[in-house]
Length: 367
Image 1 (cartoon, rainbow, N blue to C red):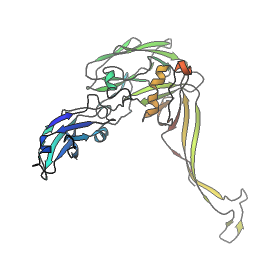
Image 2 (image 1 turned 30 degrees about the vertical axis):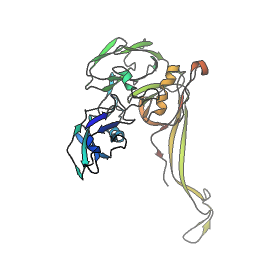
Image 3 (image 1 turned 135 degrees about the vertical axis):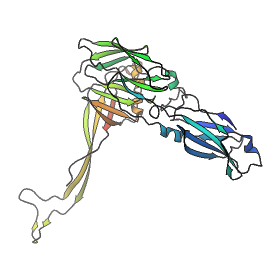
Image 4 (image 1 turned 30 degrees about the horizontal axis):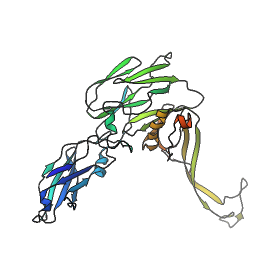
């Protein structure tokens, strides 16, 4: 048994994960009803078995296990205080170790394991059309973002994340306004969410430099302005969380759903008296007895650079986003289904508007 093809290093669980095997027994007429048997083992536990007939024109056994493997990585947003607000590791940022084992099934019986593939890990990123399968590999031991290197924050900001991809446990330095924090990843192939908010900085500081393993970002502290300042934290295309300030005009609205029933205008009392109302009001004909509403919000950034327009397309595609409002973080759903890229040479400077919906539905009074 040989493995003709296996998924590449840094492959994504959100694309195909294909193994191709070959054994000469597959074309031997003495081995009746021959099938390849592929087993998926995650962290040393067998979680799935699949059988595949040899494909005509080569007699290969072909398995795409992506639908099974992607269940073993689930992103979690749970930041804490400190420069390293959260570390994303096994089962959150990437899968645990995945091993594929192969058996043969013929003459009505399944044999012993004849091939054990190497242990592999896969990431919760996705790749653009022009990236193939190498998107996350371009950011090895670098910040996991393609955002602009100039960032605007308000002085009251307490959470603003830039994720960093560490492929080993080698320490690296995070320097914020001259203060150095040595970060030692607890495991290889993890992501640290670095909080670059101006916590504890003097009120005289109007700008500062952030260096994450020698990758430099320039932070400008802007005034709170006339409008509410929102910070959006979202799962980016690399499977990590980062942040953006929305500090321009906002529009707030409700979407309400009601239940009702119809009844006659008159009422008949137990003594047989007909009435059209009480001394206070006429009787209801249409009666609402239950309702629920969802809060919606339209938020807006400041003017964006071309780089920011490219980067923020990831917000619209993100399946997980949180809005921070006055220190409280709310899960939200982003309602925009289309995203038009802007370029200064064509569109001049523009802002991005997002229509968001808060994740909870609130019941009104029942009656």
